[in-house]
Length: 409
Image (tube, rainbow, N blue to C red; front, side, top):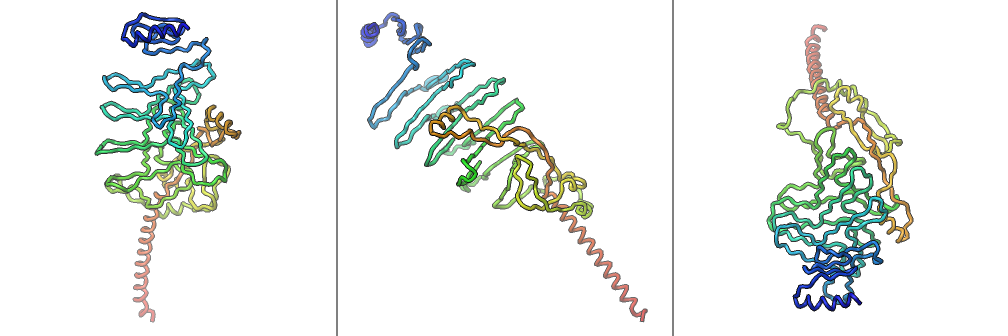
């Protein structure tokens, strides 16, 4: 009844534009400057709501829109004017939990139960006007350096039984004649730690070993439209022993494979000598790869090759040490409690999926087979010179024999 009396007194005065003294009780406070506090006797905002531990309610506020009209519906709509130069926040959430709390905190939690039309858990439109940076979404996730728990800037869990599904879908439309660089996705990772770091890590998992369907860890396609140069994948790794590409498995190229060999990029040129002797020191073999080395995908079936130890004796520049991850054991893929709960809700009691894991490394020798081509070419030239020399000697022997025949008679 007290609340009703307060509103009967305050509302007419507010409608008339009158200033009123501070009105307060245990739950509601209205200050002369227009600030209203619910659960806060000293509100510092136009609406300042504080949920006390003793309150029986578990929500600081709830907005329900049950409209059935064809017009747009908003649970909450915020309009922030772009006047001025200071920072703007449509919604600013500060969620703090105790370090010993076992509950899951959410900055924003959206539950969307769609019908037949498009649905958005979060839909952002950012006007590109002005000169400052624009963010459709900016996530800053801070993790204590002493903590070993999982930290995720963005975590997408998408499930469906039919239709298309995208964990992350980026559509960038560049209109006009902008000459600026455009990125569908840009990852910048900086770390002073000593652990393993991934700019992008993709793990594509199937339910069973016999599950049908094609899978791609990464698929890139750049149409040949326009006049600029196209790169399906551009990879660069500076320093040694670094690798711009490492493929653990078979590699197929539907096109030409070329290696840099421009004259103007070479110096300290010198001929290859003793090519035949070098090749004589190599003993090509037929062999099978071992089956007891985990974490590597070797070619199957009978193989042909040469031994790196033999190549290294005369051509050490063609033998390199390769460092590779030794993924020796299966470790669980990080799965959040929400995902496990969703699985249980859908009747899926299967254990967490596993993958090959571990950060232990080992090294092995590799041979630059393409680098053997110049040796083979030089060996062929040396053989040709030997054949020509022998042919010349044979011609000389024939001439001597021809001159000696009359004398023998």
